[in-house]
Length: 93
Picture (spheres, helix red, strand yellow):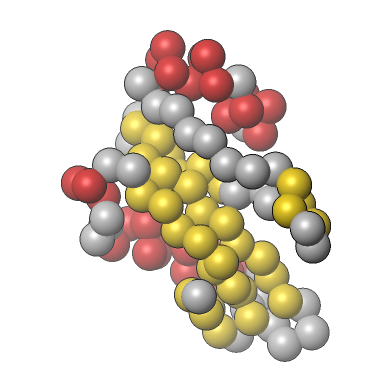
């Protein structure tokens, strides 16, 4: 899915969705996860797993569609992703 999401023309044509972010930062790279709800891309999540402390850290959450800003389904999906990585805690900065 990663390659498909990076094809901005395809995303805009089929999902009416576009995004922009900086790939490279001073201290590393940014690899956001696109958020798909039903058949709509509604934003992205920049997160990381701190393996030493078992904390799932959400560095940035960008929701572009205002209908999904308080979407419980997105929160549940984040909890499931953190559980998959065996996180003991979720921290949102």
